[in-house]
Amino acid sequence: MELQNPTRSRTFQRWRKQVDNDRKRKRSEKDDGKKDWKKNKFITVEEQFKAIGSSNMYNDTSTEANYEWGSVISPVVLSSRDEQRTLKSLKTLSAMKIAENQNLLSSSMLKSSSWQVWKLVWEYISLWRRDSFQTFELFASNFSKEAQFMCHPFVTNQVLAKKDMILKSSLPNETRHRVERVFGNIRFSNFVTTMNSLTFDNMVMLEINKPMKYDELIHLTNLTNLMALKIGRLTTIPDLVLDRWCTCIKAGKWKNLQVLSLPLESQGALCKLQKIAASCKLLYIEVTGKTIVNIQRDWKELDLINWTVTNDRAMENLPWGIKAQTIMKKYKITNHTKLPSPSTILLDFHVVNHTYIGKFKDLESEYDQLWSLRGLTGFSQAIVLNDKTVPEITATAIRPGSVQHSGAGTKKPTIVKKKLQVRNLKSFFNM
Image 1 (cartoon, one colour):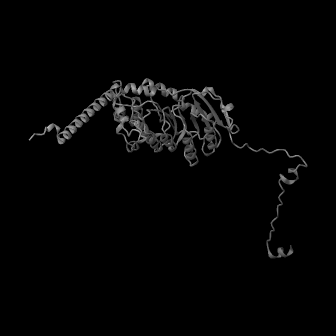
Image 2: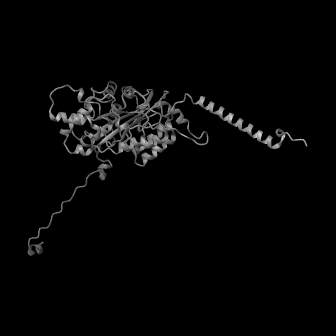
Image 3: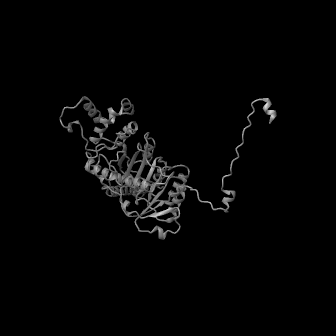
């Protein structure tokens, strides 16, 4: 009997085929792994994080890491060791010790003493570059009504970039103007909540020079005390956002908005803002862009009866904080414009197009870059609302024989009726 060759049996062939397929599959997986390793070898962690998603199945978005903007201070802070070694009073030594630990202060501690006690502490905090916005808010909430309270007590002692920006962005001898610079990767919902929770009298002037998302633009309408808003030309304002803004203004939001600067590309958007001005205190609208457009000549649908095109080149390159204040004082309208009171704190915020990394980079150079960055300049034209105050009515001379002289506008003589004086019953019957 002839024995069958085991290599020709069906069972052996099926087993051999399965082994070959497994080898091919493992070899292909190994090659794919090498390709992926070569592809991702030089990709950073941030790029890998942004690459995570569901391909084309869903509309995935990536977000940048946020930072606590209110607690950021200068990376080069000073302390009592930087002071001159002179004999100091116990009050000064105590103020210096508290200023070195400004992050431990609370509102209850400040309420325990008067402004005369805490004034020296606030001056040392500013002198040593430790005046974060959180610390400023703490002192302003308790002492903003004091005549000697200053938002920036010692500007000249700040780092060079911050000192130059504060001096250029504020009017001379203006002690109620707080200048703040914020990195672009802030959470706008947190920013709006912080502004609305302030307990001292304030008006916000906001300039944004970074690309904005739809939800961020809509969330700005919740900013209660917004007085002036400027959005740089890095952001395009779609019609959907503008319609949403108009709806929010009609609902009572942005009731203090008076100065507005937007990158608009069509006259229809500007016409919408003109119509909505009656629902708020808006009196000045600036149009910015990359191309030059004569809105008075080219945009025929504008309302140029109640509005006037301005060509004030002197204010074109002014910092936004100074420009907004100048506009309100120059074009103020009685019973329409709301000017800040002597106790009002002007909060001047500028959001720059730069991401705060923190510990991964040099903090000192990053802080200098924050205060050195400037917004993009370009074409700008503006319209201002005309004064709608009713003129005082004066009396006019009336000619004899006119309609008014015949009795329409003359005052009728009044007949004085004498009262009967009855003293007794006999005099009554004698009448």
